[in-house]
Structure formats: structure tokens, C-alpha cells
Amino acid sequence: ALTIDPARFTNLAVEAHDDGVWVVTLNRPAKRNALDIDTIEELVEFFSTAPRAGVRAVVLAGAGDHFCAGLDLIEHHDEDRSPADFMHVCLRWHEAFNKMEYGGVPVIAALHGAVVGGGLELASSAHIRVMDQTAYFALPEGQRGLFTGGGATIRVTDLVGKSRMIDMMLTGRVYQGQEAVDLGLCQYIVEGSSFDAALELARKTAQNLPLSNFAICSAVSHMQNMSAMDAAYAEAVVAGVVNTQPDARARLAAFADKSAARVRRNE
Ligand code: 1HE
Image (cartoon, rainbow, N blue to C red; front, side):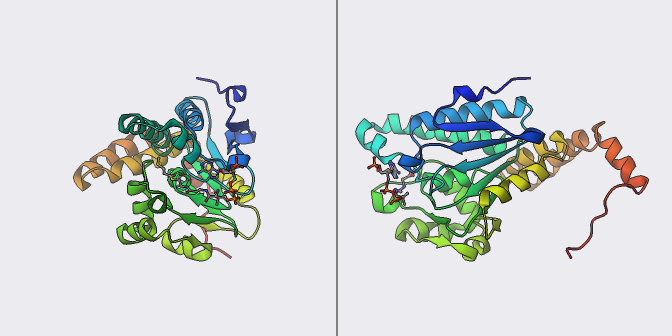
């Protein structure tokens, strides 16, 4: 197994909590956690390592008043990048975000304030999004003379559908509050702290067997990219491995001897 050394990270604050839950915080609040290339490289490092380092769930948060302001526009301006340079920047974003989405470790994003541009691309790579009452979502790229490059055309379109995605990009429309949940941008909205709620969900997911979580947090995304025939085949193969794992036997035995909790409707 690999180990993660929190001291290796600067733009991220990386902290192990109990139960194998780790908290990863975008930690440039003075820059509204804008994603410069160093931050992207740290995300690549963390999420490349996490699946093999015993990380059972991740809460992804932002320090300060905003989750993330997206691409570091000042760095992008100062670097005056060539098309090839920026293509490679985008490929590193994809590396980081694909490691999140397909890595097999549940990632719960705790959202507040601005979740915009590349910040929404980052959030949409998480498996669960939790927002508080201050959170808002937008794609300001159109107004900035830019286009999305971190996967929004795929992931945000998956969340809200093509026509809403195009409207968000053309008009800079902002979604917030319950409407954002109703549209699918986010699964949970809470009155209090989205961080506390995300941590609770992370702890809950961390109680699942790691191999089950691996399948849930990689297979579903992979299967979206397959034909239905191939997805059904892949599902059978994954279920063959996961549903016969030795660690599951105790859980099945607990169901059989009636000591396991039953599924009940909400009170
Ligand atoms: C930044 C960035 C940034 C803030 N890059 N430095 N994203 C955007 O178009 C969003 C741009 N940002 C904003 O609209 C606002 O900054 C916020 C709504 C996020 C926050 O507002 P506010 O009033 O709290 O902060 P501020 O005064 O605007 O900014 C505070 C500092 O953060 C300031 O730096 P300072 O050194 O002058 O204090 C800002 O320059 C800095 N800052 N946002 C760099 N984004 C792979 S393609 C992805 C395409 C995109 O993501 S396009 C980007 C879309």
C-alpha cells in the first residue's frame, strides 16, 4: 500500500480523519481557491494515490468564503499560453478529475459560495455534492472569452442536460438554492454547514466495504461510456468479483441471522 504524506501538499490542505475518511481542502482562500497548475498537480497526486493508500472516502472542501473560482485567470493571463500549452493544461485537469471520478474512492464535495467555471467542473467530478445556503453555480466562461476545458461539456451536461448547459454558458445564468438540487447540480442542500453534512456522508460511505465502493465509484461512470450490451456484460463481471468477496460473507450472515439492520421507510 502507498502512503499519503500531508506535508507534500501546499495548495491543498490534506488531513486524515478517523474511519479512513480524508479531508482535502482547496487552500488558497485569498485567490478564492482559483485552480492554478500547481493545485491541479496536487489534485492529480492525491487522487492518483488515494485508491491504493487505504483512503475510504474523501471530503473535498474549499477554504474561505467560496468553494472555487475556477481556472486561475491571472496565471492564465500572465503565462500567455499557446494553444498547445493550454491543451496540455486541460489534459492535466482531465487527469485529476478522471482520477476522482473513476478512482473508486467516494468523493463528497462540500460546497459553499462560488462554485463557478472550473470550480463547477471540479465539483461535478465528485460523486456526491452537498451545498449550503450560500452556494451558487455558474459557468462564466462565455463572458470571459473562454470555453470550458475541464470536463464541463461532459459532466455538467450530464447533470443538467444539454439545453440548460448551453444556456448557462451563453448567458452566465446562476443557479442556487433548492433549484440547483432540483436540476441535479447537487444532491443535498443543508441549512447549516455543508462541510459537516459532507463529513457525515463520507463517514457513512466509509462503512461500506472498499471493494463495493470501488465498484460504485468507478463502474457506474465507466458504464455510462459503454453500449448497453457491453455495460451489462461489465456489470456482470464486476458483480461477480464484488458480490463474492469474502468480506461480504459476514454481512450476509448477519442478514440471515436477523442481526443486520433492515431497510425501512424514513420516519
Ligand atoms: C482569482 C480568480 C480566478 C478570484 N483566477 N484569481 N471563473 C470566473 O470567471 C470567476 C472569477 N472570480 C469571481 O467572479 C470572483 O472573484 C468570486 C465570485 C469567485 C469571488 O468574489 P470576491 O468579491 O469574493 O473576490 P474578488 O475580489 O473578485 O477576488 C479576490 C482575489 O481572488 C483577487 O485577487 P487579489 O490578488 O486582487 O486580491 C482576485 O483576482 C482573485 N481571484 N477569482 C485568479 N478565477 C480549464 S478551463 C476552465 C475555465 C474557467 O474556469 S474560466 C474561470 C471562471
